[in-house]
Image (cartoon, rainbow, N blue to C red):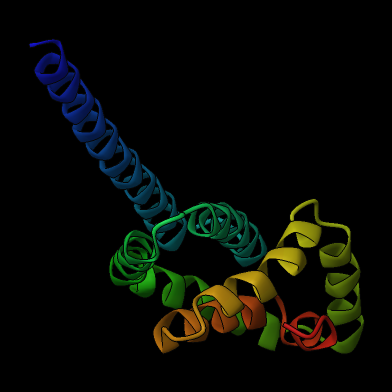
Length: 161
């Protein structure tokens, strides 16, 4: 009788932990979606939109790298991509339009400002690890490269991203 109670308790614990993980992942995805939608639809300057995008993407990459189960991590990454690709494209489009209007001195100034951003070190450290882990998923490698390139064409290439 004690063994049955133990197995029922163990099964309940495993079930509750797995459902908690799914709930946590869905909460993360909802937060990312809310953040990116707000950035894409706002009238804030393009540089602030880009800052918000890269900060959110750093958070997403950290979450994606912490999965142990490859199937769950792939589902999480795919859901992120499906939910947020249009917002990321909008933010990057706004950023590219803005950067296209900058003269050479302003571009250099932008590069210097980006080099001092607090998220840059994490971004540079995470991108290669993230691309390596998800290399078989072309859509996420493309999305990561797009975000890295949006950081600025100049800085993205210079950093090897």
